Image 1 (cartoon, rainbow, N blue to C red):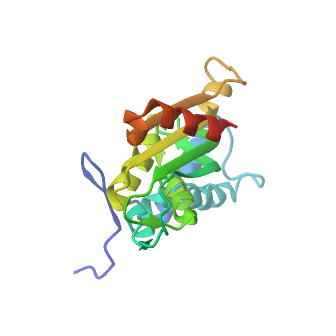
Image 2: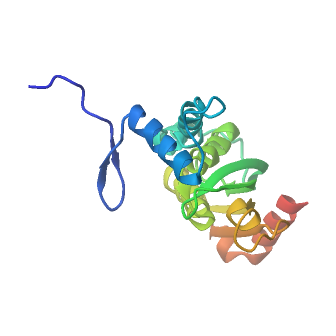
Length: 205
């Protein structure tokens, strides 16, 4: 009977996938290099598979992180503060699920505290966790807002993402100066147009 440890398991919405070994990942990169028309054994490329796999480990470490854990430590004493808390210019470094090409930009996140608040660095960390997964920008927008809604129970949340997609700038239509903006509002931000407008002005100002 084999005593080798079980491979980590990835659970997705559709199925359960066994995570390949590091050597399998290295071999996959070698295959892609050869498919592109080069020799993975030549001196300039021989260490490339290791670098690519290490980079993937960093780019996609959001799969091993828990946004709920980041938002679990909250504070209830807000000394009567009842206006929005907004973070501007949070860096987005993500990859689209269609071409695995980067999309880079900024996130703007606001919430109206209910009975508890969270450290502002945790909000930036939530953006980072979801960004370091394969998805589209619309999904990223939803994931951020739903995590904040679920764990903080605020009176409202607003999220705006503004990003340039390299699947559009470096291939296909090759439009280099186009960015994509997605927004979503919940609670008071959704029911009060003046509040949503103030968020947008503060975010973009």
